[in-house]
Image (cartoon, rainbow, N blue to C red; front, top):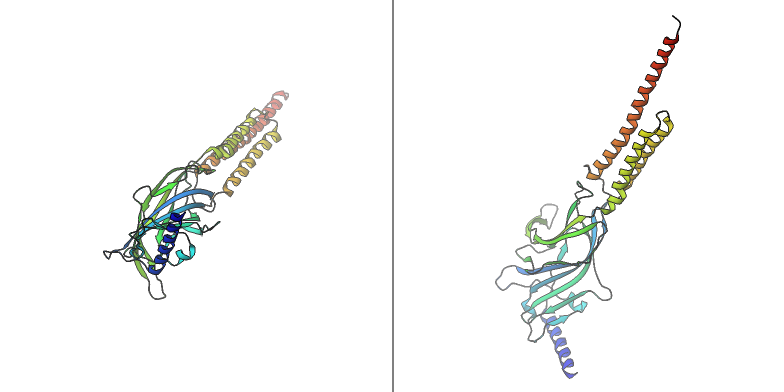
Length: 331
């Protein structure tokens, strides 16, 4: 117990020392170069994938590491900092998710973060956040499509000459293998860089352009065809086959054949409208549109075939009736 009290007392003293030497200004690198910030991401859950809005929600952990020589200490153990008031007094990398529509820091039941400070001033910081990420979908092959969504991470105010962001060398991106999406399967998760030139500090007369470090967490998704197979392909295929039943109905039963053909056309239109309601309005044809168009063509072809045959048979009956009258007329 005495040893535990000594450790807690030493940790409290170390935290006080951290507060005395800490500053919200950016740490300077020893060689004068940019501050190296290593980043890692763990995807805890992905859900609420809305194809119509081209967005999804992700619950993730962000891990960061950098060296601040002002935080060096002589303790044999790493100093744990989990007090939000202390965290607010320290410098932290100003990372943000560039393609996030909304982002929220988790604080139930306490602010979800921890920070460890090593003897040489190396800081290991992790936090948990929930984000709504935009994802541009390519629906040409829908519903047999593969999507590439990504999360872009940048420094908001520091250019690459000031803060250089890099992925951790080992396992920079991880994800919970129990993540289950209703329509998709996660085929792969990779890390890459998207460093580029961006405009910032805009005014009415001028603006600045600088090179920013950019990290990209790539999420590759494959759509499961089971839902569309049950809800679209099988019903529409059955509707087409039902329309062919009219070929076995007596040609004289015109109302029955016309009613069956129009009913199948209306059913196909209703199914197509229900599918398009849950998808974004795009200017190109999707694979499912070609399927629906083909089904519509077959059903309409059955109706057109009946109309042509019916007209031909009525003409044949008329000619046959006239021929009989001439044949029975006295000569």
